[in-house]
Length: 143
Image (cartoon, rainbow, N blue to C red):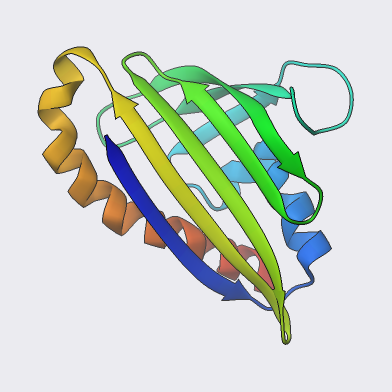
């Protein structure tokens, strides 16, 4: 299993940061592995919302499905996905701070099959990339 968490303070109100992050169609502006995301379920974003996502991590283009499995407005979103042999769970946490929002992106990936051989390299890559993604979000929202 691969596990990584990174946090950053974003100088925007919690409600704004939360609304931006939970709308996965915004991911390409800050999560540079995401090419495109489409909502595939009806209704407002919340528990049970489903997305189809095209990604281009360093190992080639792929696609998969995400589902929101945990949701507390302006506080927490948990998304589980399936991308071939990888099952990521991403937890987004939002905490009010003086002058903004403390945003945390926690990623846990279960890797199956032949991809398990890649786990050591994936751990190293995720450490750098996850920190980059939260930094990108800060830049995107503070413009």
